[in-house]
Amino acid sequence: MEASFDALWQEKFGKTDYGKGKSLLQLTLDEIRAEICGDDGLRGKITEYTKNPGSASLFNSVIGSLVIVAAAHGIPIDGAIATIAVLYILKIGINVFCKYTEPDSEAEQGKNNNS
Image (tube, rainbow, N blue to C red; front, side):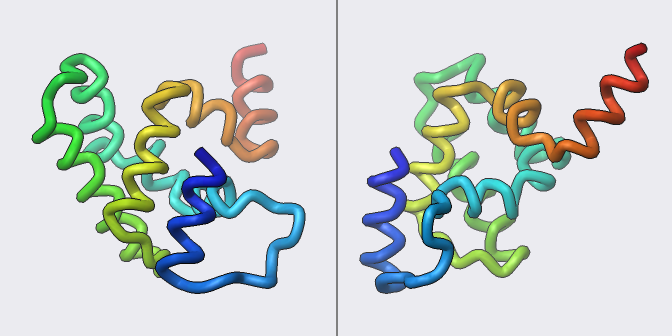
């Protein structure tokens, strides 16, 4: 998925020489993580789609929402790039994605609160 994301990004925006050794997909997801994991609208749409994975309209709604959220944060992604990101999130699951990408400070707070 990362190779597809990188290829689509380069096709759309050209080759980037920064971020060597970093995944462009992961950096993009990190930037919009708060919106994906905290926004009930987008998270709710992803959850709703996982309950009804055959719904093309729900899938398109998730992609459209991701494009809008990303644009609001200055990340210029188009539908094809958003599709790759959504497929990635759907593959691993929204809860796993949100817990796995949780910044260390939030993870530590969660451990301390559960103790």
